[in-house]
Amino acid sequence: MKISVASMDSMVTYEEIIETPNKETSTSNANATSKAFVKALNQKTVADNIKTATSYKDIFIEASQKYGVSYDLLTAIAEQESGFNPNAVSNTGAMGIMQIMPATANELKLTHPFDAYENIMAGANYISQKLKEYNGDLDKALAAYNAGSNAVDMYGGVPPYGETLSYVQGVKAIMQRGADVPYTNYISRTASKAEIEADLKTLLKDLPETDEYAALRNTLAEINYL
Image (cartoon, rainbow, N blue to C red; front, top):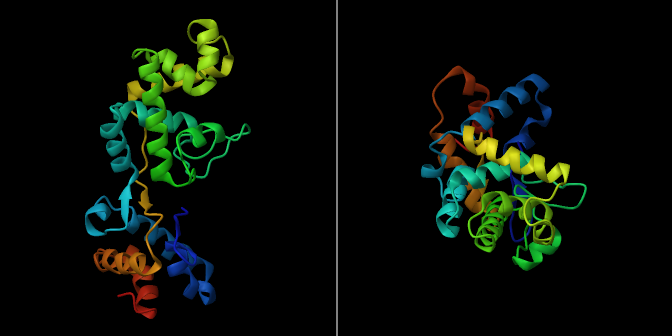
């Protein structure tokens, strides 16, 4: 798991905060610590406990409400496009979770395409525009999201491109079964290292008193996080 945060003077990650003191520990202990931390960070209570993070699910809900597009549609697009990978780049240059093309990013004023929050919001905005353009016709809107409006207009519907046909069918199939949205925590791009560390301390103080978190607790105690 890689969660990057751009601060004013550095790029920090939760991993870097806790992995530095592990350099002299054994590989097995480091792995155990890392796995325990990932599990702790992805507790469903994280969004309630700390200020600098929220979940992908919550971002999709916010985007759905803001742009009037169903949560199921947005998450289906994300799963089909990138598998919820915020760092995904296609061979045509599409970027991020919602796979926004550079030209589209410019139109949408998306300045940080690999920021999960901004990318999801941009994707929701874009599919919302396509739905309005085609009077709510989902097939045409999805085809336009994938192949562009010119192609849809040229063929008067979903163009006969293998990729686009598969794309439209794939998104609709995911909508039917429900997307497998990972409970991944998004860390605010504007959060400072100090804010992140403060929230990390808060989160880690709530770790269960179980053996699986023992290695993590010991490591954090050594660097005065607990």
